[in-house]
Every structure is written in C-alpha cells, then in structure tokens.
Length: 238
Image (cartoon, rainbow, N blue to C red):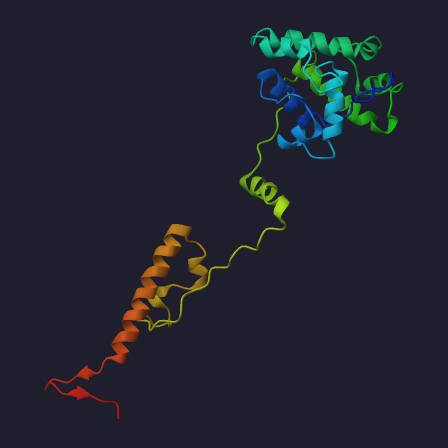
C-alpha cells in the first residue's frame, strides 16, 4: 500500500501528461490498478510517473492501491455536458484550502503563488500553480479552455520508439550509381548529378537507380561483345 500523502502536500505533476491520464480515466482507457509501470506504458516519463500517481491520489481518483474510486467512476460515466461540472466539483473540493484565499475570477499570478506558500514541497511551487491552473481550465473554472498537447512530429515519435534500443542509425546518404558514358557535354547521364538525386522521394530514387543500373549492364555487355564489320568479320581492336 502506498504511503499516505502529508497534510501539507500539493501535487506538482507536469500539467500536460497529468491531463492526458485524467482524460484516459474519463474515457475508460486506463488499466486498473493504476501503477507506475502502467503509467509508463501510456507514455508518462519514468521521472513523472510518481508525481502523476500522487496527483491522482490527491484528487481522490485512485486509492492507495491504485484502484479507481467512486469519484473516478462518476467522471467516467458522465456525459459530455456533465463532465466539466463533476470535474469542477472535484477540483473545488481538493483545492479548497487554496480557493478559500483567492478569487479565481480575478486572481493574479502573485496571489495564486502566495496561496500555495503553505504547501510542500516548496521548491515545486511553480509546478503546483501550473497544474492547478490547468485543472481549473479543464473544469471551466478559469477562462482559456482545456490545455491541449501539441501534436508530436513524426521525427519525435520515431525517436521515442527507438529510445529503448539505442541511438538511431545515421540517415543513409544517397549516392549516385557508377559512372556511365554520357551523351551530354558535361559528362553526366541525362544531366543528373548526385545533388539531383537528393530531391527524389524513395520510390522515384529506386526507379532511377534501377534504370541506370540496367543501362550500365547493357553497356558493359555491349563492350564485351566483338563488333561485326559490314563484311561480316569481327572488328578487333588489335
């Protein structure tokens, strides 16, 4: 069983991954019991997983054994219209000691920061405030609407997927095929250079490479076959 949270504790998980997990609970897409390994499997960084799990416990969404609570079930069963109201009820309840000393409708950043001064760990106060603001926005208690994760680029996704198997291999440099006798004045086949090949996509590059290879083989075979003269005799270079 997990250790009870101190009375002066305030959660300080990074807002975006915490909201991702909260939305999974609301959508019924988080395996039970909620564990550190389970959070890692849904994309929460290892260093953030304990902070996210403690935040869920603080909000009363999972118990000390990682099981979803009745409040979590209320969120999961809520309709789209009901959902913000139930989440607002949860936020107002667990952050009551903060809301008692600030007016959310016009609180400044300084006032919010001061409201979290009694809580620990004090070094994480900016993150406490950021998580509270994100939850308040998610519950429509603050203007601005829900916080959305910025879509990851393909490069970022590929990099994360390769993280467990070491560094990615360097991208292969496309090189031109073996030199071929050219019909142009600058010594290139149909005017193609190595720089030109860099602009082709994978399918076109493969097609050009294959075609030039066929031309090269044909020229080599032709060079190895004795030429015939007009009178039918072989033309020798000797």
